[in-house]
Image (tube, rainbow over all chains, first blue to last red; front, top):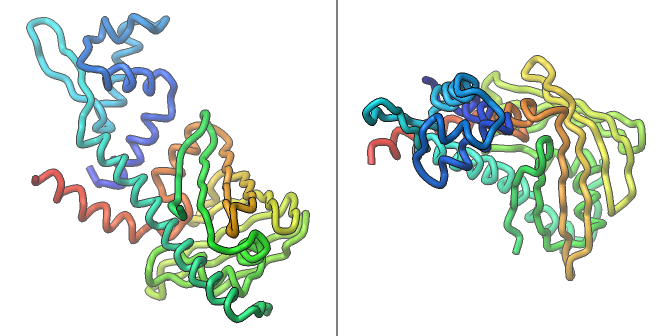
Length: 115
Length: 160
């Protein structure tokens, strides 16, 4: 998947309280669908649908263990989102670095730059 | 401590804070004077803002147009809801990419912090999904360059 569309999918996947709660639970360690469904008043199929969204977004992985498929956090996907937020901060910071320079400049000259 | 912070709050807010080594009067002016705005609100390297129209009063409109000089560009329009000189700006804005994004309600506060200013921007999006899409699509616009960098970054990491 194209990186930006994967990020779109990741942030969209996060735009749901149940899916965030599932990620928060998985952050503590691997869990089965049954374990994940427990704290929610939801059926396992409903939880599975949420898991599918998280898996498609690259945020959750599964493995086969006998008859169960425990889910875990996909470190790469979560890191990619972290990095994206860091880059967003950096781009914003670039604006404000320029503003710093501008403020330092107008402060030393004591003159406005009115149009 | 000038470091920028960016975090989400509740379901629909994005909070950005930043310190400046200048008094609130100067930082406020840099946010409301078009000639000043054009000098810093540019996003990634290589982008400029050829059009900057600002009617900085309650009910007044503003329009920012950016270009990268290579055919890519986009613009933001907005309306001011409230301006309290040197302290607070409340406005509503949307980005045209080229379709308009849902309205972003933005409150910007400038507070004296020692000899400088603590700026706090509180954005409110209509719903969680819009906020998610906004974070994903590049909040302050002009993020194409960031995507390019990001794309360069991820395969590199995956290869490690």
